[in-house]
Image (tube, rainbow, N blue to C red; front, side):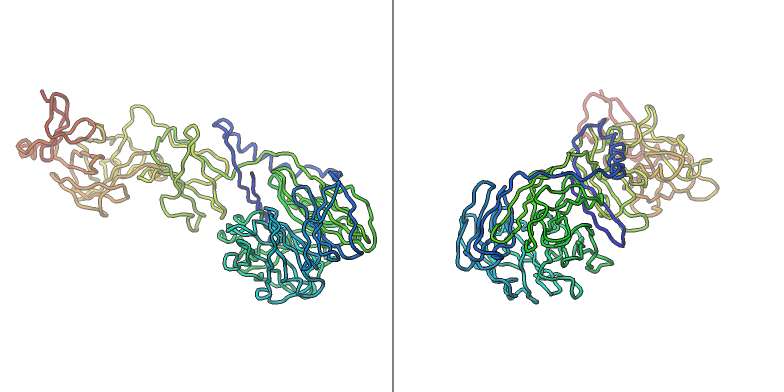
Length: 616
């Protein structure tokens, strides 16, 4: 499933795409093409809006004109409150009945969470309608919910927006209200059947609307589909608190849907979309299908039964309902959506006209579209690293995570996938967490990166430094160490010195035209910067950028990667006499120390002298 955050700021829109692909290597290499196809889709000429046919419509009688105003759909049924009979009525297109009856049901607002639990207002039309509710669970148990202590500025509430979550669960659920003639939106948070603001956060939004922007026809709906997405948005800093996680249609006639964005670290009300050809604000909901955002609003110049589906992502009307064009001058319209699948929603409309309540269920469906991952890839075929890390940062800025970065897992055909987080990151280094790494690379979404393929016959490790005639020459390959055992390398009679009394050196695993190439490999160095070393010494080796300091001259170096040591000998033989008399230490060809060698070939170290010897 694709998730798109569309966040306009200062008339500029940003689209962030998160997605999932399970193709093999060949399909992965076509990602750039798929991205281009998807990007070009918005350039296609706008088609005429689709005409939506209802799955069912039904006229249900009510107790008196004005006693029913709004409703809510759930699982292909429509529920509404009749304050004259103190009942919640349910209709399914062919029949209707009282779902529950209670003398406290005296309001007009109703909402239903994702599990089917209902919340209804109990007051009409005064300010208590913003905080006095009944919670009706799926077993029809009824609980009073009084949120008066949390509503700083109560006002008339006729309409309740769609709810998310589950009011009866430990995760909880929430819906939003827009009290008329006030300046704040409120989230009503219910957890395990009780009002709970400790878990949800602040009751009221941290932003305030200007005077006159909200009235009793304004409404707010959740900006996210689940509680988990909402809390994640707070953690990611997309919104300041969960109480700002809404879209709000302002009062009748403004035609604008707004959201709350972090602008320079401050929660700010910003326009989300202005939808043409609509009048009343009671009919409003928002949803996402196949990576695109949509809103549902009414379609007409007064209270009508028809609605339009407007694609926010593409900024165009994509569908219009085919319900009766005009119901009546006293009609009030509400509707909500219910997501059926990743490609389909049901749109429920409720409109009253006199003593009739017109209910309908209309499906809206889009084609499944290809999506492109916000990923980069590492092909580990050449490098064969035991671990693969991705280290990313903004050029000139901070990294996403401390070195060595994010550990990648679950490769497909030796290709690792890294989902790039939001944040404008544009530089990346792949590494094994043990010294081997790439150069600083430009981060390109969809690209497959890979290490250089080893060239047969070349050395695994090279000496670099003040080599006679090749002073710190990154491209020089003449100082390759011979592999004399597993993890043990040696270079004989290498002359260091270019005129100075002392020389400096280290070991690298890659040579090339630049230090970027060298740095993409592993560098073996001393414990400290310019650590002195002399003939006969064996010092510790580390994977770092430090060099050793030695008197200029000719030497033999033996590098033991297994024990991470470096030994220096004098090839002139002056020190070989003492070495010949030193006790022998035996290693097998894998570099493992052997206390009691038997028949076979061994690496033998006597003092500072290292040889290969056959033991019989």
